[in-house]
Image (cartoon, rainbow, N blue to C red):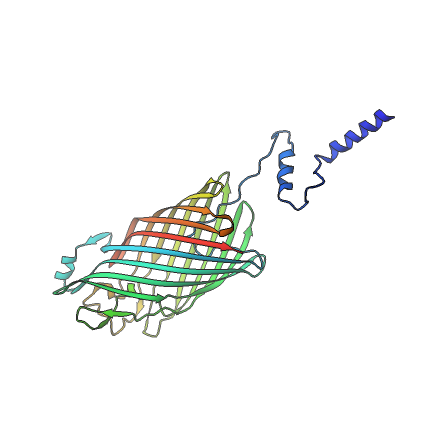
Amino acid sequence: MKLLALILMAGSVHAQGPRVPMDLDPDSEELPLLRMREAVDGNNPRQRPQPAVVEPPAVVRYTARVPKGHVRLETRLERHTYEGLRDGRNDLDSSDLVSGGYSVVGESMVHTTRTVDLFYGASHNMTLFASVPIHERTITSQVVDFGPLDQTSSGIGDVVTGIVYAYKDKPNSKLHVHLGVGLPTGETGADDLGAGGTNERLPLAMQLGGGTYDIHNGATWVNRMDVWTVGMHGRMRIHLGENDEGWAHGDSFNFDFWIARPVFSFLDFNLRLHNASWGDYYGTAPASSNPDDNPLSEIHRQGGMRTDGGVGLALDLGPVGRISLDGTLPIDEWLDGPQLSTQSTLNLSWHLSF
């Protein structure tokens, strides 16, 4: 009888599977890992836990889903450098523009943006966000009978607020959509000292805002394939009407495709392809602009498209957040110019969730 009881007990243990230690918290993260280690399959003797999806590159905007009741703070520093004028895919010589009648010819520009983004988890699927940019732009121009001239504009740009909706949010696959509204908080009539010693209106590329309410909408998809994560992100900015001066930015579209993988448990690496297209401004040029003297003030020659290649690193700092560094260089650029040509873009960002 004792032998029969032992046999029945052994069969019961085998049917129930591996036992969990009694002192292990049932909600502990170690529990599923323990079960995965002890699970036995006829074809796969042991299963290993797989890494989760790598986050999108930090330069991809409005993608974060925050758990309900939680907050995520993001800060970023972007630096765009421009050098030389281009029309179509042709680089232009400043002497040709001067001989064509222009008296002010842009040579280079540096655009630095400091942005603070705040995300709040309103529900399981919906996250509210607000984005506040602070711009600083410096342009160097060559002025006939004067020489080089540096001019600067700085201040708050157009604030964006909206929602991110997690249509799908699984460990291995995510699909998020966002919808936002841009507010006309940036200045549209920035000026600085000119060659004549008096303030003059700066070119369109130096203005801090658009002066219109805008619609921002887009979607982000990411999927893990073994250790690699692939992702796509598309977003549009649609300008509603004209500003108080009677003009408006052209609508724009941005698309990103990337692949990423963890290098170490605390470090991710990504390669990214970015495409941007934007339309000419429309409406009537401001009376104080000088398009006959400076080609960068010509309202109907501001459109273009560009394809960039980029690389990035993201470092997980644990309880103090996550820091990312991304850089891009242009692969192809077409401008309805003359416009300043992009040379490089650098993005440094940090975010913390709590």
